[in-house]
Image (cartoon, rainbow, N blue to C red; front, top):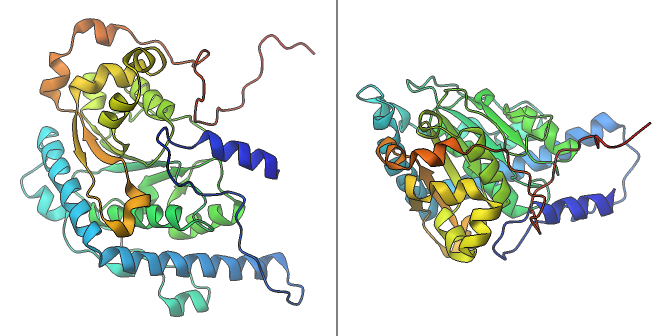
Length: 325
């Protein structure tokens, strides 16, 4: 199992070298009297929830959070105008932020389930999060999860309307996410999720390039892309790091959409440099999408990556059609 986890972790690393979280790093427990599985989970989940709550407090008072929120606000303002959202939507969405969305320390101590204030926004945004990592043991992943939870509340997206997946999640982390109220996906979609006409924010930090390419392929139309916002690796950075022929051959949907998007970089601060580096907010203006060649939209083959080295994602297990009984 340890070898499989190590191989899986390497597959989800981003293209650019950076510090990565370790799936093998787990907290050491002191010797204690034997406990039942339920008591052990309650203790471990309480620790994880408390750490998330502490990380949220630190992030919320940081200069990075206010600057990043301003960046997202600028992008969503244009995005919602494009969706012809009612006047006043932005002031509604970026309204009051409640820090009680995570458990207080007293709640954790008594193992109570954290309460969430559900606010119904007028634009009905949804959210999908891929590749957040092992937040129970990694501070980088924990801060990224904390940012997501604050973002959901700021955008008034009910946590039940946020779908989360990482193939590395432990059972403890899945239970914690369920306690927090988000929806944990049970199947590896490989990023191939259609928004089905519903405005959606995709939160996918430091994911493999193929995940972004798959996501674009699954929503390859002016209508779908114009309803999407992607918070993740900078597409401009991908263009700068990869040779043009490699980008066009291995990740053709990223290569073709570069002229059809707008990108705003996340602010960089020393405190969160390793956590949100190379991160941008991307959205797709209708005017730019409609200016792209018709041929671009007619090509719509599913990516297979057969000749792609260092794929950087975990593939969904499929049966070999050539296999025989």
